[in-house]
Amino acid sequence: MTAPGLPLLRAPNLAVPHAFTTRAGGVSGGAYAGLNLDDRNDDPRPVAENRARLAAALGFGANDFARLNQVHGVQVVHAQAPGFWEGDALVTATPGVLLAIGTADCYPLLLADLEAGIIGAAHAGWKGTVGRIGQRTVEQMVNLGARPERIHAAVGPGICGEQYEVGEDVAAQFRAAGLGEWVLEREGRTHLDLAGANRALLQEAGVGDLWVSGRCSTEADFYSYRRDAGQTGRMWAVIGLPRGEGQTGEARA
Image 1 (tube, rainbow, N blue to C red):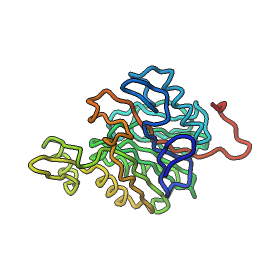
Image 2 (image 1 turned 90 degrees about the vertical axis):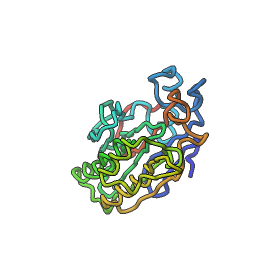
Image 3 (image 1 turned 45 degrees about the vertical axis):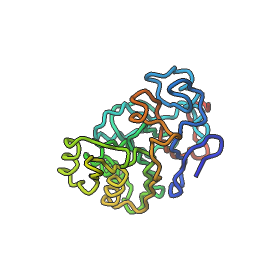
């Protein structure tokens, strides 16, 4: 599914403003051409425009994002307002806050319990998957009042098992974490199925409804750190609770 205005991917089971971006629809150039949302290496001016376009497409302002310095850990941040923190997952019950996770091969996870009015977003690379970042996000949502069986979860685009070759040290950590089922042996080489592992971990956490995009970040539609040898942009997975009538916040972009 796509969202109007920008070629954004949407999960059919999330009835709340959200999106998984592609690299199309933005103004960045060069190696970052398209809708790059990371300004660490790209010119910050087109990145700011790209972020404003994304926020506007979902009915939010450019200053409504809650973002992370992602460190491939398991810290879940409770974001009660827009801002910037260190960690690898975010949860909120605050309307008008747009949670954002950046990826370029790792998997983005978006979650929502709309009855409780609680949402979450997580960054799941291999380290986060071993650390069960998706389950930790569910736990923090439950601490705010969510119930696992009411949570709808979506696993966005990330590097597919066929393209994700790893060393034996990484495979060993997956096996030690009880995730050996998702270690794939292909013609003498070892691969990881991160999508399958995160799907299984979310199911184990008891989420009531689950959707997996099935898209691989090495496709031309996306940025891929591995495909592009490290010089590439970033997609964002975003989710937010809309403001109710009478609520105000940052000026709209």
